[in-house]
Image (tube, rainbow, N blue to C red; front, side):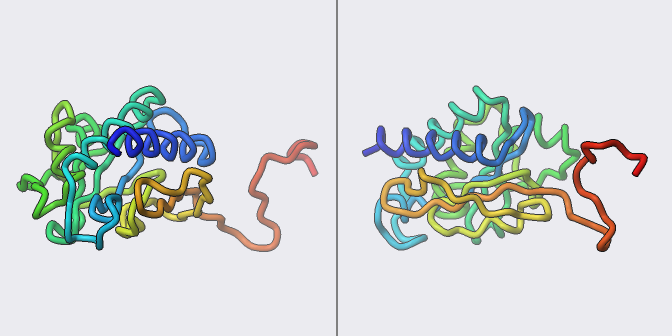
Length: 187
């Protein structure tokens, strides 16, 4: 089962990157209920084996495509996030003092603390895109404006995967132009 979870996670991540037209250096938030992945109700049966497989698949694609990951903790840690310390420094984020474990943070966040090179925990950030594995609600950590993506790879294990990318706000009124005019700017 873990091999299938790893490959499904990798496929969903790759599809998010392609559909979302993400560029190297993009930050992707991952919310996950490993309980849901193994067919149980969220928060009832977290699985370290599923978390390990998920993170291996997600990191393999993220590293190859030069993306950064932020792993969302569960509500017991107010949906704080595990990131690499390099991401914390690059984005000027404030670190908080906590060590996510399976029963307070969630299995995937706990795996992030073990597998990341130099993990750090932050309370909030604004990611460029995200994968929500098991309906954990990642919207609070996405930049405005979130745009849902319809993935073909929309299941990992026994649960649904929802994906989103972000775009800048569209501002202006009826005269506003949002793309470079093909015929120049003199008209």
